[in-house]
Length: 74
Image (cartoon, rainbow, N blue to C red; front, side, top):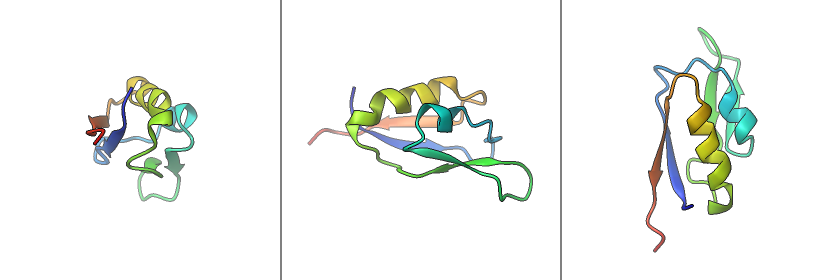
Protein backbone atom coordinates (compact mmCIF):
# COMPACT_ATOMS: atom_id res chain seq x y z
CA UNK A 1 0.00 0.00 0.00
CA UNK A 2 1.17 3.50 -0.76
CA UNK A 3 0.06 7.05 -0.48
CA UNK A 4 -2.50 8.38 -2.95
CA UNK A 5 -3.71 11.59 -4.48
CA UNK A 6 -7.49 11.34 -4.82
CA UNK A 7 -9.42 12.67 -7.82
CA UNK A 8 -13.21 12.54 -8.13
CA UNK A 9 -15.20 13.16 -11.30
CA UNK A 10 -17.81 15.49 -9.86
CA UNK A 11 -19.77 15.48 -13.13
CA UNK A 12 -20.58 11.80 -12.61
CA UNK A 13 -20.77 11.58 -8.80
CA UNK A 14 -24.29 10.92 -7.55
CA UNK A 15 -23.55 10.93 -3.83
CA UNK A 16 -24.39 7.30 -3.06
CA UNK A 17 -22.11 7.56 -0.02
CA UNK A 18 -20.22 4.27 -0.27
CA UNK A 19 -16.92 6.17 -0.14
CA UNK A 20 -17.91 8.00 3.05
CA UNK A 21 -18.88 4.70 4.65
CA UNK A 22 -15.57 3.08 3.70
CA UNK A 23 -13.31 6.05 4.53
CA UNK A 24 -15.12 8.68 6.62
CA UNK A 25 -11.79 10.34 7.43
CA UNK A 26 -11.34 11.12 3.73
CA UNK A 27 -14.82 11.51 2.22
CA UNK A 28 -18.10 13.16 3.24
CA UNK A 29 -21.40 13.59 1.43
CA UNK A 30 -22.59 17.12 0.69
CA UNK A 31 -26.38 17.28 0.71
CA UNK A 32 -26.49 21.03 0.01
CA UNK A 33 -26.19 20.76 -3.77
CA UNK A 34 -28.44 21.97 -6.57
CA UNK A 35 -29.31 18.55 -7.96
CA UNK A 36 -28.45 15.59 -5.72
CA UNK A 37 -25.86 14.81 -3.04
CA UNK A 38 -22.20 14.69 -4.05
CA UNK A 39 -18.99 13.58 -2.41
CA UNK A 40 -16.69 16.05 -0.72
CA UNK A 41 -13.05 15.05 -0.44
CA UNK A 42 -11.81 15.97 3.03
CA UNK A 43 -8.22 14.88 2.38
CA UNK A 44 -6.98 14.80 -1.21
CA UNK A 45 -3.66 13.25 -0.09
CA UNK A 46 -4.45 11.13 2.96
CA UNK A 47 -1.81 9.44 5.08
CA UNK A 48 -0.69 6.00 3.88
CA UNK A 49 -2.30 4.47 6.99
CA UNK A 50 -5.66 5.12 5.29
CA UNK A 51 -4.69 3.45 2.00
CA UNK A 52 -6.82 0.34 2.60
CA UNK A 53 -9.91 2.41 3.33
CA UNK A 54 -9.28 4.69 0.34
CA UNK A 55 -8.84 1.70 -1.96
CA UNK A 56 -12.11 0.21 -0.70
CA UNK A 57 -13.88 3.53 -1.24
CA UNK A 58 -12.78 3.62 -4.87
CA UNK A 59 -13.57 -0.06 -5.39
CA UNK A 60 -17.13 0.14 -4.04
CA UNK A 61 -18.11 3.46 -5.67
CA UNK A 62 -21.21 2.56 -7.73
CA UNK A 63 -20.37 5.08 -10.45
CA UNK A 64 -16.60 4.41 -10.39
CA UNK A 65 -15.79 8.13 -10.21
CA UNK A 66 -12.87 7.93 -7.75
CA UNK A 67 -9.37 7.77 -9.22
CA UNK A 68 -6.37 7.02 -7.04
CA UNK A 69 -3.02 8.31 -8.23
CA UNK A 70 -0.11 6.63 -6.46
CA UNK A 71 2.36 9.19 -5.12
CA UNK A 72 6.11 8.68 -5.00
CA UNK A 73 7.32 7.80 -1.54
CA UNK A 74 10.31 10.19 -1.74
